Length: 295
Image: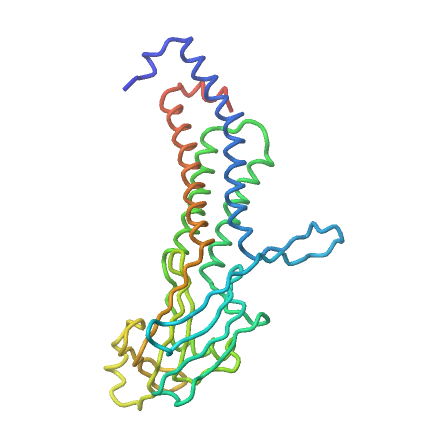
């Protein structure tokens, strides 16, 4: 590995010029690319646009995606959902589980009371934090110290990583809370023995349907030891009553723009890492007094 002592003064000057160019020319270009990638992602969510010219805030809502729901060789679950921004804003669902009812059960989700996909809300929040960090640095202007840029790249990468993790780590729902959510969002509410939820898993939105059996309070200690609410046989208490999961159905909807978003986030992370690595290489070569001249 080449050490500082092996460089001639002219080589040090040339390296310093390259370092200055990195901070004054390449860095603004990287900032621009990062903001563009993040803005592409943020456009997929509901955002408020205050620049319409009339002084009022307007909802700028992207076109939603409609998905048909069905199970192969089964009519237990059928429906249509619309995913827009960070929510399921519309849905028409039909369930047919003889254990609950001899007749199909129908329910709707309306735009006035959407089903919030909290993972997508988290993605939006983390992306906004990354965008704000870059924008604040740009407002400061001028040539920045390399150490500050390294810290900034680390901060932006952390926000991007949190955004991606929100997509790839499914959110676990508490079934007792889901019963309450179903009552608030579904119109008309489904029976207590039929509970649904939506969550995100990578580039997919998953509809989970739980069929419950109402129990007496006998052997409650044994039931309480069952902790995995994703499996059949899980028992829980809701408003003083005990329920057991006797069936679970999942329907997966691949959402193309969420898959694209993961690619865009990965590209932004790579840009940050490349800039961080370049600056660290110069810091490992150039003397501290030379680096200070570029601050």
